Length: 419
Ligand SMILES: NC(=O)CC[C@H](N)C(=O)O
Image 1 (spheres, protein in one colour):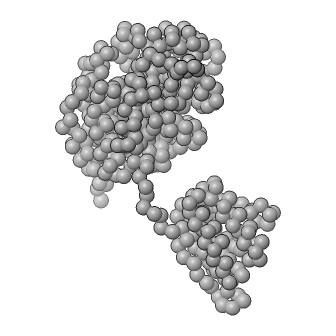
Image 2 (spheres, rainbow, N blue to C red):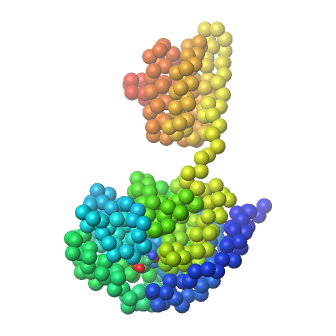
Image 3 (cartoon, helix red, strand yellow):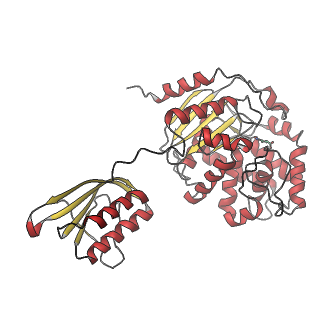
């Protein structure tokens, strides 16, 4: 059978290719000379399948998309508390290159605008690290995320350096407020280099899939961020990633995202996919016009909006049956699916309400694929309370979805092979 996913992506791409509004970024002279009609779309799943169409293997500069990953790196190295002392996480509603800091604290409003990104760039590396060493660390991170060696577009770097007054002004402002301490010239030069790393839409889809996969690169298996760091990073991408159009983006697309003036956009849908588009014509906010349309269509057609309310899950209690008769009768609850808080709530409510007449209860987890942290505690606590009420309880759990089932009374729940 031919996999239909590539055809589907091609269909979406064809529909968006007719959009020709917007222009490539021109404030960086070298970017103005790109072919404005290039267009590529790539999608990577969290188990490493990669789909792409069009110019998805064409290299372009990562630009502001790097800000998201470098923010993650700063948090990984310094810890969130220390990073928050230097950069806030409030959507600014300002353009990306706004020359302003938060009243009172003097911090940049968030790490996705230039002021915040220059700060997080400067937080990378230990104290006394050279700007070359800092860039090396950032470059390594981006290569690890992509799963291949990436190069730098020296022309784009030099071109942006020739027009970097605004970023220099931001860096001087930051230093005057004690937010950064290194030379503004050196920090901006290495930050602009970070923005000039060359990627393809396929690379970006893999990088985004690493975030969707809670920090583990789907192909190489390397853990790059912790699940907790990714949760924070995706939250900031959702609220601040699309600058002053973040509200529109969240309501229309609903996928944590980041755009760059090189024409790229990434989106990472937790637990599902990383998506990337490349199309150099930008809207007035500095985000790709075709890219936004592509994301809107993909989100709408494939139900990828984060706030999409899933149809009520089939009950986690698949079946309740009685085995045996009289004194020997046993009540079996067969659970199924992925059990999180709400699933566990249904199970414990049922157990609390039902009060089976049978004196032995078996909870069969054969068809359960996983039990989340709080759900585990809830299920074990319910089993403990059933025992207190005089029931004998057993588990059937061949795949150990509930390992070490000690409800806290020192008597692990016994296992049955079958019933
Ligand atoms: N939005 C962007 O992609 C901006 C990145 C660019 N290097 C800058 O600092 O201006």
